Amino acid sequence: MADGSMLKKAIISGAAQIRKHYESVDAINVFPVPDGDTGTNLSLTLGGCAEALKDYENPSAHETAVFIAGELLKCARGNSGVIFSLIFGGFAKSIEGLDKIDALSLAKGLERGCEEAYAAIDKPTEGTMLTVIRLAASKAVCAAEKGATTEQTFIAAVEGAKAALKSTRNLLPILKKRGIVDAGAQGLVYIMEGMAGVSSTEKETVQSQSESENFNSDFTYCTEFIITRNGTGSVADIRSFLGEIGDCPAAAEHSGIIKIHVHTNSPHLALQKGLEYGELSKIKIDNMRLQSIASGK
Image (cartoon, rainbow, N blue to C red; front, side, top):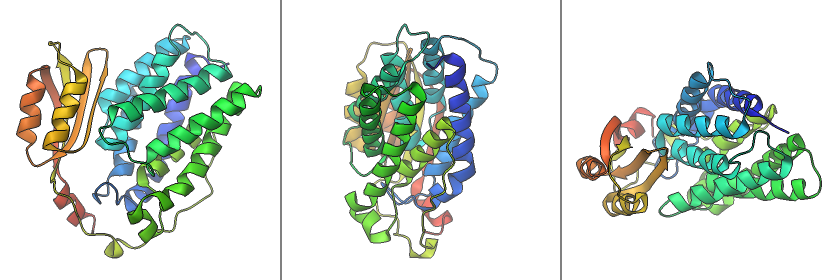
């Protein structure tokens, strides 16, 4: 059984693990655009949450999970950070009312997290961290149904995630061409290993940056911000709008806070739409083309 204290320790440990490996994850970041920041984004997302958790104490698994989900959403950076926050947000919803989590509750929570992430992405792509969490959840459910303990169930999820990671290089042409796995998928595996207290021994062979793909996207600006709701608009509607003005759109909500992410040539349109829903904060607009050049791609 896992309680709030164990969830707190798991997230802090996951944050430490991705912090150790963020540079190697950045180095294989070629999808959806080669801007070399997936590891950095995941590290900042988990690191911000871990910092907020330092002074948080609550024995209830559900209440702790709700707190973590909210902090992850606030701190989410990049598409990968938003997706991880969605996964954990779904997990938190799944264990509502539980002070402690048994094996099956853990497995079902991972399933719910997977469902939330797929549902919130405009065009879910296999061969990414979505594939990793889907197969990890499947392995967890199988283990729990066979009588595994909570710890054994999460270890099974990690093993499923690692197996799925290897498959990513064959699911996306750009990864197959480079002979590498997906950066977000690799980052998620590192995080899960950290949460489980497992050290990774596998290292990816990465081509030099000079051999990387050139920046190839119709959209230049990675646009992110938070909306504090004061309206009643649908999150699905704003997600659909983001898909019309760019790609990689994501809109996720938790406790009246909406996190927005999109790659677009018109950041002002995203901001204007956001104002229809409430007050904006933590606005971040990065030129991915310049990021790509700075990374040597």
